[in-house]
Image (cartoon, rainbow, N blue to C red; front, side, top):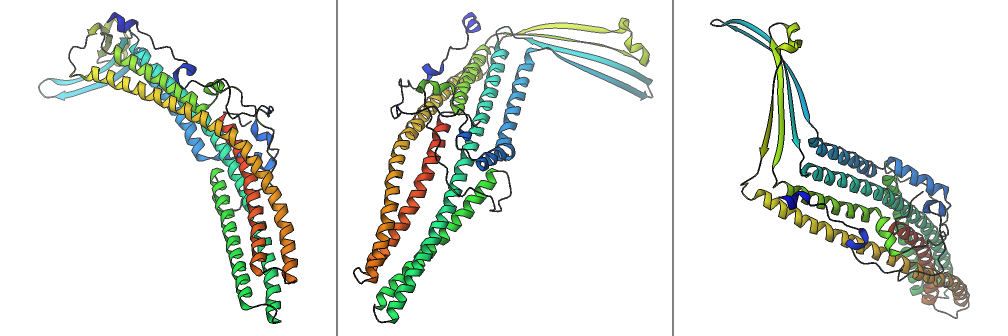
Length: 441
């Protein structure tokens, strides 16, 4: 009993409770420079900033997360109330009108006091568990803020890209129709066969179908963004006309710093501490409990007499309760809490490992996406020149229609892929900020 009573919560540190991080990031670029601490300002886009602010103020999921924080804090207060005396006041009035005993009326004022003396800290340990859960819920809410800002910015960039893809597809349809008019004119003059005309018309139809798909993507992303903003999804949200350049690279710091910076890691570690506190409370439930109870009051037929202290009566009782046989309930509760400590410990380790993976992936993707963007920029320039040569060659009868159509398809694919990789660079930068636990502003 003394060993259990004197037992404290285990000492835990984030760096010793999870995966041992390396001294530096494996995919880090030594040429990275410090970025602004608030990543939203780094994009220098007033429209994006306004949309993120709207989402943080109006998103219903974020408001629900804030309400969960308030509920968790209230639960912690409830859990700690048992450490204090409980006092209740019960005024009453009795009236009897019996034939045998006659008429009787009386006023009563009763007080009841109960207090379980927390000798071993059982209630305090339970309160600590609820306080830790409240802190974890607060970290969840802070993580939800970062996640919502990131999703809003990424959806905004996706919408901007989709609108640019519409412009590219519209120009492609216009160019294909121009080629179609050229081939139809040559067909009418007997300079080309019907197969060429059919191939061109098929290509025009495919280009128009692709345009319809890009326009559908715009409405899908517009409504998704409006939902994040807490608005009715009308599909009328505005976006910028160009994708911005990625801001300065973020200095990733040391991997060990991630353990105390990311909200999800803070929440997982705090829940581990809460599980330790619940285990301590369950073990101390085997110890005796000292309870003090007191009650008193007065009763009088006259209302004025109930405040006379000479008519008051009271009693005080002190009781000691030692659990002897509970059908194995207390021992099973200890085993349950031990299992939950192991569950929370492994959940923390898994969360830490996943956090390190996200940072390493984002750092590595930054390099590959930049190389891809450079190659696709070159591909766009080359396909535009090859298209001009293909049109000239077809007019002169030097190339076949399939070569001409392939040059237009290559141009469209290169332009579309270039826009996509530019947007992926922006989204990956946000993923890196999010993975590192960077503040929005």
